[in-house]
Amino acid sequence: MHLRRVHFFFGIMVLHVHLCSEFGLSSAFSGGSFLERNDSPSFSDLLSSPESYASALNMTINEVVETKRIHKDASDQLFRKLKFSNLPGKTKHIMQCKHRYRHGHHPFVCDQCWSYAPVCICDRMLPKHSLPNNLELVLWLHHGEWGLTSNTGCILAQTLTPCTMLMKGLPHHDGEMEALLNDTDVLSVVLWPSNSGTRDFAPGTITIDQMKARLAKQGQHQRVVLIALDSTWRNARRMVSRLPESVFRLDLPERVVFPEGCNDVSIISPLRTRGPGVSNRQVCTAEAVVRALVALGLSEKEGERVLNVAEAKVDLIRRYRGKPLR
Image 1 (cartoon, rainbow, N blue to C red):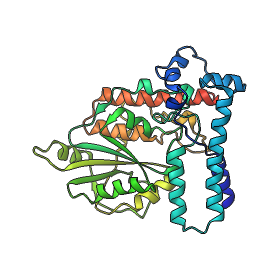
Image 2: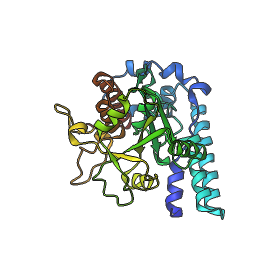
Image 3: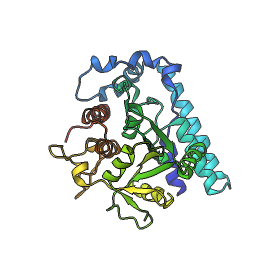
Image 4: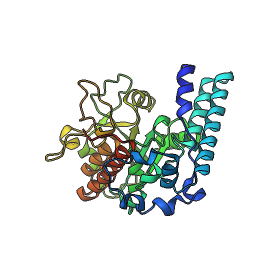
């Protein structure tokens, strides 16, 4: 990565502080107390003054300033290590991953739902829904997605079980993924469209019906794990190319992604910056995964609830950023 781009990237990265335990944010935001008293189409007024912002965070101005200073120090320290050391590229990548895992993107973001703290939606995510028998979900994230407020994959981890989130490049997460892929008692399937344009990934394919048969087979002891990539398309192609050829590919037909009567505009579209000719039919992680799970046996009602939570998060983030509806 070019040094100027690294400088910019880490200049905007911030320390993720566990605010709920350190500053008592759970009492202020858990349960939606702020949202219950503010139905404004935009929350941009929260940023209108230091006093307003500190009040929304249930912090003093000095606490806000100190938290920002801590995150800046952490980012600056990492930047210096990356710029002035002769460490191997892989080592530097691990350092970036560890930094993102520990500090996130923003100092005032919930570490569970990855929403800005004043619009935390954790109180809306429970109880968790169980996946169909023998099925597990693994979300494999690029480090750039970890802690991102526009991310919807984190909603899956908080509303479905069993579900695990792993960051590619984080050593202990890589170890878990490697153990999973090498387990002969696990059938690993990656959710990956056949029209993705990649030439680096050519394993066998498996259909929805074949997966359902695996899950329904009496006495089945083999675990079936659905791996969902959470990244930009460019990075996802690189990630999927590193999976062994023993991993099956599950391609969802359009009728599954956009069932009859379903709105064919992605729920993430209000947060996207769209150029000419780019379709809003490109679904987000939560949509693709939920529709695959419903096809595999998750109830329509449970799937709809998960997507409603994701859609609520997107709307709150949009309002917090002051973005108008399009």
